[in-house]
Length: 211
Ligand SMILES: O=P(O)(O)OC[C@H]1O[C@H](OP(=O)(O)OP(=O)(O)O)[C@H](O)[C@@H]1O
Ligand SMILES: O=c1cc[nH]c(=O)[nH]1
Ligand SMILES: [Mg+2]
Image (cartoon, rainbow, N blue to C red; front, side, top):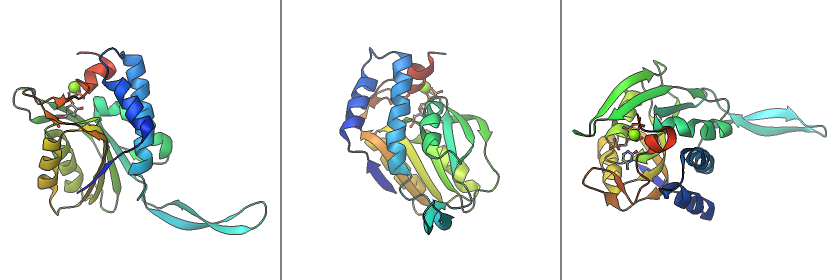
C-alpha cells in the first residue's frame, strides 16, 4: 500500500476551516469540493495514458490522452458523494459507479445498502472516494467489492485517515492488489467511539444533515 499525504498550504488552510465546528453545511460542501480537486491532482498522477497524434494550427505533434478503458470513480454514499464533483472535474470522461455503505455505530461493521458497479473491472483503474478512513472497515469492504470484480489498481481518496485504519487497510489488502491512499491529513488517533481525533465529526451529517 502506498500512502500519499498532500503537503500543501492551501490544503492545510481549507482543512482547518473544514474541521471548525462553526463551519455550516454550505461552506463545508464547498470546501470538500475544493479539497478534492487538490487531492485529485495527486491521486491521478499515475492515471494511464497513451500517445496520440494531433494537428496544431502550426504542425503535427504527438500528445497524450487518457488510455482506454476509462477510469472508474466510485463515491461511497453518503459522505463520498460530496467528493464526486471535485473528482470528475479533473476526470470528466471517467465512468461513475456507486456504493452505499453505512457504519453500524455499535459493531463498527460496514453495512452495504447500495451497489451499482460494472461486473468486470479487470484492467480498470478505480478511484474510491470517502472523506473519512476511521477504523478502515468501510474501505476494506469497498475494496473487496472492486477486487472481487477483477480490479487490481485502486486509489482511495480521503480527507482524513486515522493511523489505526491505515494499518487495517494495509493488512487487509496485502499483496492482493495495488492500493494507493491519498489523504489531506493523517490525524492522531481514534477516540472511544471510533471517531477520528481531532477529525471533523461525522462527515455525512456535516455535508447533508443528521438523518
Ligand atoms: O472507517 P470506518 O470506521 O468504517 O468509518 C468511516 C465511514 O464512516 C462514515 O460513513 P457513515 O457510516 O457515517 O455513513 P454516511 O456517509 O451515510 O454518514 C465515513 O464516510 C466512512 O464511510
Ligand atoms: O470521525 C469519523 C469517523 C467515522 N465517520 C465519520 O464521519 N467521522
Ligand atoms: Mg456518517
